[in-house]
Image (tube, rainbow, N blue to C red):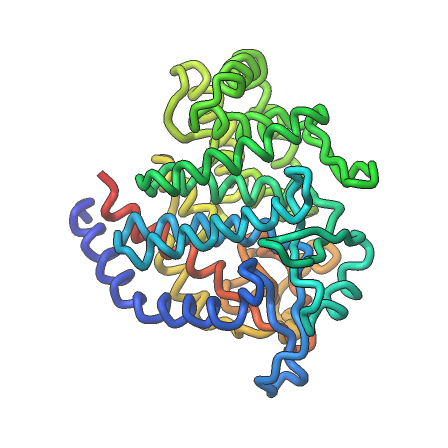
Amino acid sequence: MKPIAVAAILAAVLSAAEGEAERIYGNLQERHRPYGQLMDPVFGTPESEEVIGYSRCGDSAIWTGHLLAAEAFRYQAEPSSGNLEAVKRTLETIRQMIDVTGQDLLARCAFPANSPHAAWILSEESSHGYYSGIVNGEQWLWIGNTSRDQYLGVFFGLTAAWNLVEDVNVRGGVGWLAKRLLDNLTRHGWTVVMPDGRVSTTFVHRADQQLALLKLGARVGSRTYNNSYKSLALFSSGVIAATMAAEASEPHESYFKFNLDYITFYCLLSDGDSGWVRGNYRRAFEILRDATESHENAFFRAISRSVGEPAGEVAPLLEQWLERPVRDYSVDVRSEFTPCGENRSCEVIPIARRVTTDFLWQRSPFQMEGGGSGRIESSGLDYLLPYWMERARLVAP
């Protein structure tokens, strides 16, 4: 089939799904952003519509960053004042997640101290510790022990906003937030240090992730980060392929690592590098893509296509996603698939039958059992993000 015909079919499929995307997005806005950040509501029973708490606050930063990326792609696909305001709102939310720490750190999540859900969140996130801070003159609490995942998710969103939204206020906000986070990280030697001196994580051993963050700092106009990026890219871009080979050598354990790798490469494969550096990035990315292409992962394919690399179709996978439950019902398909390890199928499980979770594409497609009690509702971001990436790709020059 000719490429023009394929594009026309894809456009028709995505256009038909627009109503579903808007419905999911509307529900996300209504139920999943009690304080601006992305969280998931907890209901009293699987049948109830009464929200009694909020869950998954500890990963709010990474998914709020993914949401910012989704809204940036949405704006590119459909430029409008409303879609622009959505991007600005999420940028403001990320600002709050930085302001509340008082030290240009990134909080996992933050919420008003007087929120009726504060006790629930603090109980669920007790292992990470919490701190107090001020947001817009009000007392808030924030969850610490911030991980690399959270930083990478936010920088993914900031990079997408910079790439896709040519608005002076958006670009100014992206640059300001990126520089604040980078200033704190580099001041502490690429280590995330909490206000009480505890170290929560470090980027020291991941040159690829340092480069992804520094590249945005360079692109927003910082001379310091431009020099740092170019120097590190010159000496370290060639070793990223070895890092990806190590990641790909074990495709089942800690599957979420692949999601972090893909958003890192979205940042790295943006414009602005010499042919030699970009060639190093592409060779490393090919290792990652080859290791996961058969996994029927809509987001990974959408990332590949958005940076000009070959990948399978996305739209058919999104159609399967619509067959999934939105709540975290328990899933057990062990009787239907041949096992090749503990809780691992020998074959990729169809999307509609995979375990329920927060963001499907960061979970192993071989996992046969998982989920919860049906009381937590997922946001649908795992549909919206690849959907709008594909929509944006159709209108990209």
